[in-house]
Image 1 (cartoon, rainbow, N blue to C red):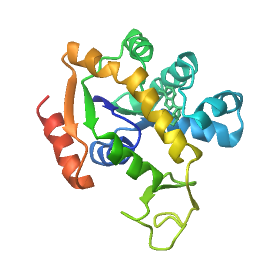
Image 2: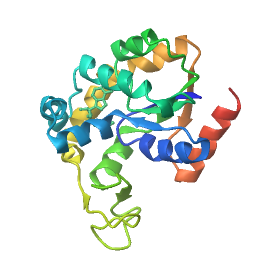
Image 3: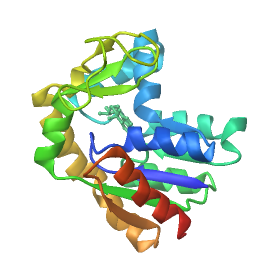
Image 4: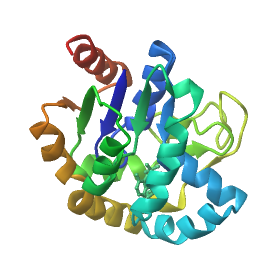
Length: 211
Ligand code: AMP
C-alpha cells in the first residue's frame, strides 16, 4: 500500500500516519521529522534546511526529493509506506512519479484555517519520540514530559503564531494545487479532519478498504 497524506500543517496527518503504521505495519515517512533530525544533528542538509524551516517556507524541492528517493529504496519500504508531508509541490509529485512509484491513494484532510491556528499554537512535541500533545486538549500527565518515553516536550519554533500563518499561506500557494493534481489522476479521497483521532481514523480505514 502506497499512501500519501495530504493537508495543511496541523491537520492531523502525523498522528494518523502513526496509527496507520501500527495497524498496517508499513513505515511512516515524514519529511518534516527527517529534516528536524538533520537540523538537530547539524548535518549539511540540516544546516541548509534550517533557515527555510524557521520561516515556515518550504525546503527546496531537490533536497527533499533526494531524501525521499533514498528513503524509499530502503528495505522496509518494499512492502508499502505512508508519505506524511511529501509531496508538497507539484514538482515533488512529478519527481515521485519518476521514481516509478505507483501511488494507491492521496488522502486529503479538510480542516478550516481557524482550527489549524488553534491546534498548532497549543501543540507540544516530544524531542525524543516525536509524540504529540496539546495544551489544553490533550496534555501529558506531567507538564513538559512525554507520557510514552519521558522525553522533553517542546514547542516547535515553526508552531509560533506568525510562522503558522506563513505556513498556511505557503500551503495554500504551493501545496493545495496537489489536490487538483491527484483528483485528475483519480487518486484523491477527501476526509473531514475534525472530531476525535478515532473518528478520523475510521474515515481513513473506510477509504483504504474501498480502494
Ligand atoms: P512538517 O513537520 O511536515 O510540518 O514540516 C516542517 C517543515 O519542514 C516545513 O514547514 C518545511 O519547511 C519543511 N518540509 C517538510 N516537508 C517538506 C517538503 N515535502 N518539501 C519542502 N519542505 C518540507
